[in-house]
Length: 316
Length: 266
Image (tube, rainbow over all chains, first blue to last red; front, side):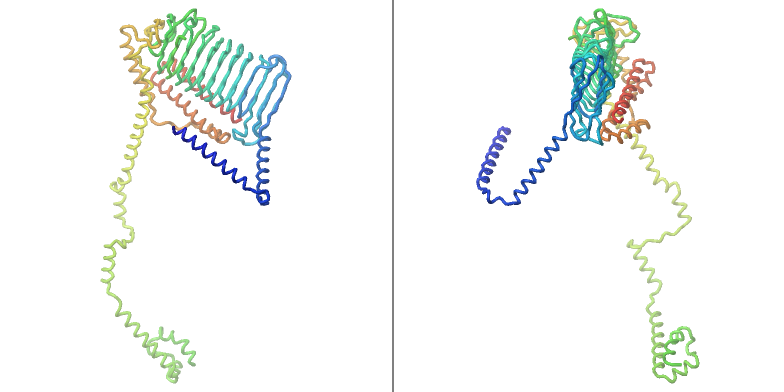
């Protein structure tokens, strides 16, 4: 009711203002407009035009195209701004940079099959003025290095090695495989979806990591206070090693998972609901804080470790 | 001698010269000049009257003593500070020093109280976090603690409730003891000052990216807290290989923080 009353009041106020404006305009005689008013109007118009043109000049787009061979090496480094990468032509790299101000420029160079793109701030710019957003279309097999403090960083449908770094950057990697995926953030959250046959190494101090259908010969996550969530099958006969200091670890796997498990939390609680088979372990197992066992043929090895976080392994 | 010359020397003669004894030409002029004679007579009269006036109006010394006593009683005047060796010796006596040294035990008491408050403020949080860790009420299904070969019993849910017969009590005692030990180990009295390296690191961050100083500082504090936490645990459990690995991981986290900052400020 208060919202409806406020809306009614606002509508009435607008109608009243509109009527008053019309009455006022009708009473104005063109001959009676003083010269000072015309001058004021011109000044305001000029100021507005200047502002609009300044905005138009401030934000600009630049496009760079490079012809490359197989397994090109592409690097993009920006202090502030988003980087988004999608697969494109197999022999061309297209970089579109959106510069938010005239005080930042793009340094770019190609040395053979290696391309380096970097934002160059021409002074102590803040995040808003120094922002440069990049959109890349690259060959799917290219090796990619991205760095942005603010992010976000987004990569999709690539097959090469990926290295993504950003202090506060939100990182999204989707539908990639057959390569290295290295991600490092300070507190930016990391999401990996459909990463197949990857050599995955993730490190963050306080960012969370969310993995859905991530597998490969190595999937390693090392966090401080962030949490790890894994939803997959621990496939590919890989080695999965998830570690946190205070963050919780939660893993979902199908009932027919084939993996050897070892979980241990020094001060936290450990739980699972799998019918694990006993196996020899060099580690001492303490109920409630650790478990060791195998499921299926133990094709993969899964190690879940935390100092004081909670660990849960659940059947999907 | 003229009249002018007489007036010029008159003050000296009246002040210094013996009364009634004047130079010969001076006396001869005064005797012959009526004006100068009257002037000298007036000056002598004034001088003698002034001397009598001063002697009659001078109050007796007891008057000054009474006035001073009344002013002192009203607190309007104080005795001037006079150095008195005996008084000085008294002022440096142990009794006098005690009035300043009483601050020391009070400060110590405040410190102890502060430490108590800090430690007890953190203790509930620690206990809250550790409470679910003790398997007193909800033991997990995998429970072969005695041997290195462990067996996992199938469990229908994520919160199983069964456990071997004698194990729970033994594990409960063990866990309770461990929790107690860990709690005491993790009770930091006061957060230590950042190391020289950390201070230098933060200083550089402040210079290069001042807007990020608070962020890096908070992250650094968190990482250092993790390191201290594991170190405290390892002091009481030096043989815990798992905890040692966590210490390594915590240091890696700190290295990661330094590296990210370095990348940023380059």
